[in-house]
Image (cartoon, rainbow, N blue to C red; front, side, top):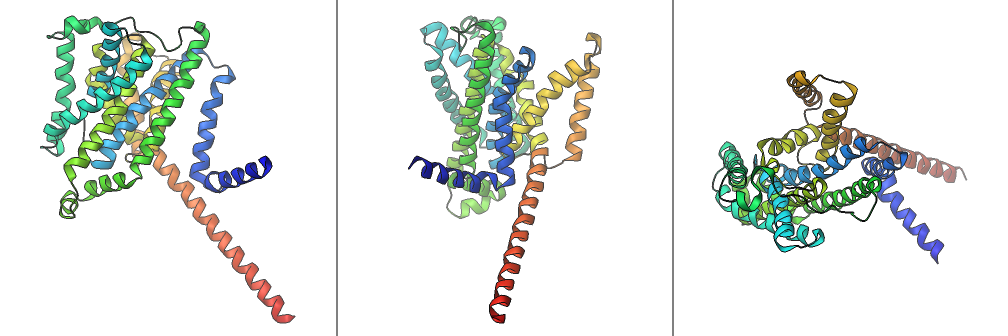
Length: 363
């Protein structure tokens, strides 16, 4: 009975994953990242991967909002910062553990997304981008210098926050954090991918393609845009909350404009509107920034501007080379291979059938 079940499971896995080149590639990448820490990589490289896992959640949440609905947001740092400060404030003032504060931070992030969604949806195009960009700047001033600074700790932020695995030795904490962020990334990516390919996702794409036609078809455009804002805000808040506990502090840096620009660069680099593209783009971004231009090519402190220019130049070259995104180009190639293989199988079946007919006619 067990052997029969295992055979059926393997047959299903082979048909759904092993025989589909894009899915096989995704499975191999997942296997690689699951086994990578076991190769004995150093703590610095592990930190890069933990950071990439965390920001990948943030980036895919932006991709759902912008890549599926076309709502250009340049203020996604707002949700990241809200998630970070929500978990920190709940821990500091109410003494709640992180497994309670993080889910509450997600709810706060989704509510904030809906609240700012109403005024944002009144404008479009570059005006929408400017309006969204204003919100994290306003909150940044409030938590750093304004009326909220006595509560939020001003420029120093809220610290120390509890780590995820205080009961483990220091050497094992980073390994456990890596697997935690990888699992949360996998859950987030699969959830957002399912949403993007569900009935709701199809409606969002129809709004992106032709909003006027969607309204004429009876679709409540405002409702679906707010749903996209809420889901995106929820997962961006998750990334912010994780980031706060990894660093053991929540500070105004999570609301800075540079944080909002990360998903823009990374998504264009990987492939916008694909969900999987931003994942690859995030790893390329952090490997370039923290490994290639930090370890492989050591730049003196006084040449930091040169390092930044080199980074921008590399990203521009990659975007020019693959304008639709690196991941999208790779998947297209793999799908071409799949189609070619299907044509070969059809041709082989045709020849086999023809041979059988010839044999039977001779008999």
